[in-house]
Length: 150
Image (cartoon, rainbow, N blue to C red; front, side):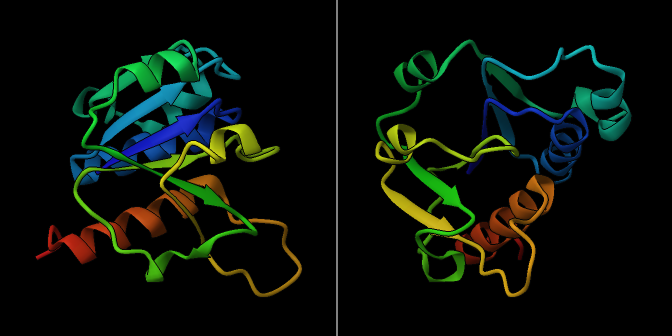
């Protein structure tokens, strides 16, 4: 399993997700254009000293990323409002978990290229979960289902 951040905008979220990836041995793909520099102090602060423990692939754009993924991979798109509940999705080790930018989510043109669309249920008045929180919830469920947590 890998995490894919499509055009991330908020450095601390990306740093927190990098830390998540370091803790789980998960590859992180950053698909540009990014909303910050990878040298950003906020990005490094959130990731602390874990960046050297993360396999990070940086892609200039979606088309280049897509050309370089394995044909065995499945793009699992995420949404705050649409799709099936993430716990109803059957995850596989080849899944690429795609998360959109914090401010607007994945565009329909990108969502349409995925194999599945999943969401985390939200009860209440908030618009969405924090990106790093959502990535952790979905990734750990995927690893639970595939047996990596044992």
